[in-house]
Image (cartoon, rainbow, N blue to C red; front, side):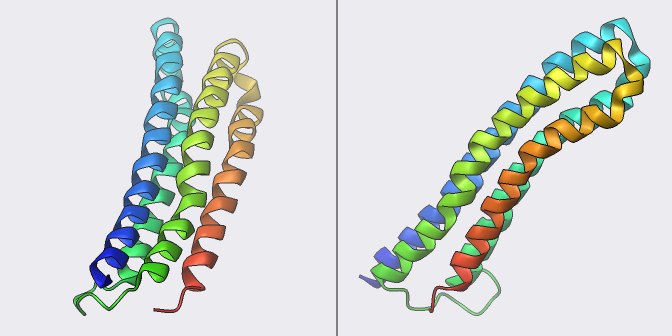
Length: 159
């Protein structure tokens, strides 16, 4: 049974890193497609395009952070050796990883779409760059809230 607890915790870490990373990859790709089109017309907008394309990548970082916290929690990182994790504790770690896995996936894609639209906005109105950064940053709020919830939940599990 102890092995099952560890495996459930590893599953949670994998979901956090995998889903949040996938959402970021899709979002960055969507923004990159839009950015490539804009830069064919005006290569001088590379810096602005790069900033807006990078924004959806943060969800993947958040998912990776939670994955590290999860495997650290069960002793698989840090040199101390794995601790005894029962099934309920393993399930707790798995469920604690779900907020960033789910919100990271969907917000990464949504932020990519918003960034792509804002890239199109700066193509026509470069003076609106400040507004173009704020709009996708609003989507980021929900990934940050999910990150915070996953951290709080992980910290609440006694192992």
